[in-house]
Amino acid sequence: MSFLKSGWVVVAAFLICTTVSCVEQDTKVVKPPKGVIPIKEAKMLDRTYGETRHAIILEKLGIKDNRSSWWSIEDLEDYIAYARSQAKEKGYQVDGLRIYFGAYPKSYSNQEVAGFSTLFIVPTGNVETQQGSLNLFSNYQQSTDLEIPPLNMGHSRTPPDQGY
Image 1 (cartoon, rainbow, N blue to C red):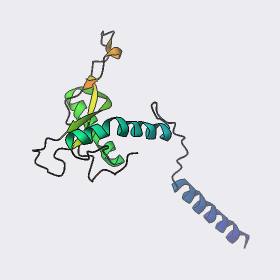
Image 2: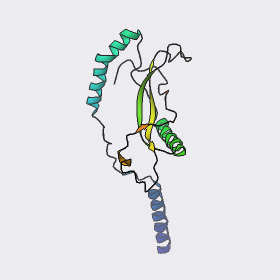
Image 3: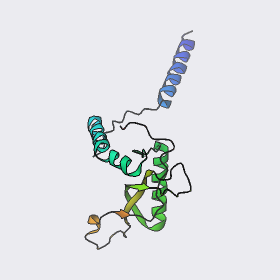
Image 4: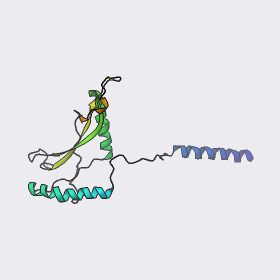
């Protein structure tokens, strides 16, 4: 009987250990990156934009223009992977993303977006230098927009009536 009891204990211990080891253990503490601002400040920035710029745009264009764009996390991660892959093929090193304001002409083929503002994302970086390069200023090069197709069409629906 003691053999059966100890056998069950071994089996139970094995099952518990297997189950615990299979559970994802994500205990890494992630610190906010440089540039993260409090939500209160973001709301102040958005409110100031609305008070100082959005009304002027509305008056000038005569339309209620976009105030934001949205991309899924998956789309952004996929775009970063794509940009890095394209950069590697072209001998670039991606070091960031630049977001540009843009506007579709009123004659644009897609009438859902014609005349409206948009945001698009362009990867930035530099041409990769050979290891052991004698360029003493290689760490001080300013990032430039890379010749890689930008990411746009982040807005798949009408923007919210109110700002952030």
